[in-house]
Image (tube, rainbow, N blue to C red; front, side, top):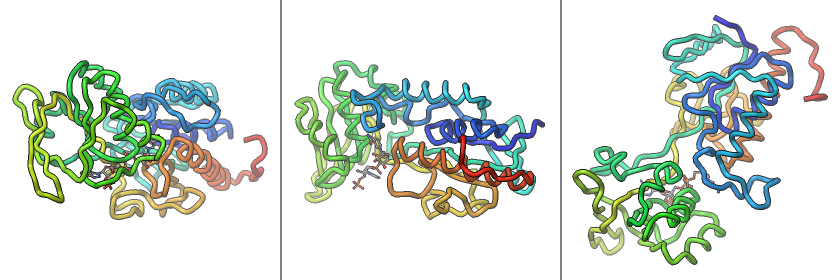
Amino acid sequence: MKDYDIIIIGGGPAGLTAGIYASRARMRTLLIERLAPGGQAALTEIIENYPGFPEGILGPKLMEKMREQAIKTGLGIISGEVTEIEVKKGIVKTKDREHKALAIIIASGAHPQKLGVLGEDLLLGKGVSYCATCDGPLFKGQDIVVVGGGDSAVEEALFLTKFAKKVILIHRRDRLRAAKILQGRALANERIEFILDSVITEILGKKGVNRVKVKNKKTKEEKEIPCQGVFISIGIIPATEFLKGLINMDEKGYLLTDEDMKTSVAGIYACGDCRKKLLRQIITACGEGALAAFAATKYVEELKGMAYPGNSDR
Ligand code: NAP
């Protein structure tokens, strides 16, 4: 088993930024990523609110650049799903391997939330999807329903108008939660229809989705909407199941940290979407990744009895 100074769990913007900062601070650092590096940001078509790109930048492109930069600084990246951490020994276990470190940074992000209605699991991959960037092109010329009223749902709806004949956005309240700029674009888009105050009660179809049952929460009226795709975009749940009982988290599973990204366990830090906070954006994930790496480096240097050199040259 190879020993590291710092192990980072998760390769989205928070984890990759932590990797850049830790490696530049000459920490022997390993990043373990479940799928491909990039996280949810790599599944976003265009990113318009990350400074430095006035025309916006494609999500996969930005994440590829972050990854390239992280590798250039000396960060080791491997694939693997972390299943357990042995805190006292600093051991991070994946299904088939174990790695050891003096400090650990959790940047495990979040998964899409499920709607929990009949037909959702059965028709997953047969019309039901949680990722417009991944599956949108499969629905050329078809009618698509998007569920949710946040930034993600509105962005997905806008993106899907590139392929769909019609996009119907179904939201449970009478107003959207998404940023006003996105709402404005969606309202101005002739291909997007809105069904408000309504919830989907069932997704129907045999070989593939062919309609959804929708109930108006105010009038209690029920109707069926024909569609071939259902994109569910109703928020996220933190990927922190493997940390239950180990690190303090809120009732939803978001990790609690102090302002230096320290968790309730000495030597373990958290950053990005898995952390309890007000604003989940790429920019905040990156800022927290930098902070977590800086705090973890300080912790490792103190453990090793090295003089702490302050924040110069980092
Ligand atoms: P979100 O902001 O939490 O919005 C979730 C939406 O789904 C809300 O409109 C919510 O309704 C609805 N919803 C939740 N549970 C539901 C249920 N069981 N049935 C029906 N509808 C339900 O989640 P998100 O849009 O995935 O965004 C996650 C985070 O990433 C946010 O902080 C967001 O700002 C950020 N983000 C930012 C950008 C960007 O800056 N461009 C892009 C994507 C995501 P209510 O409104 O009634 O609660």
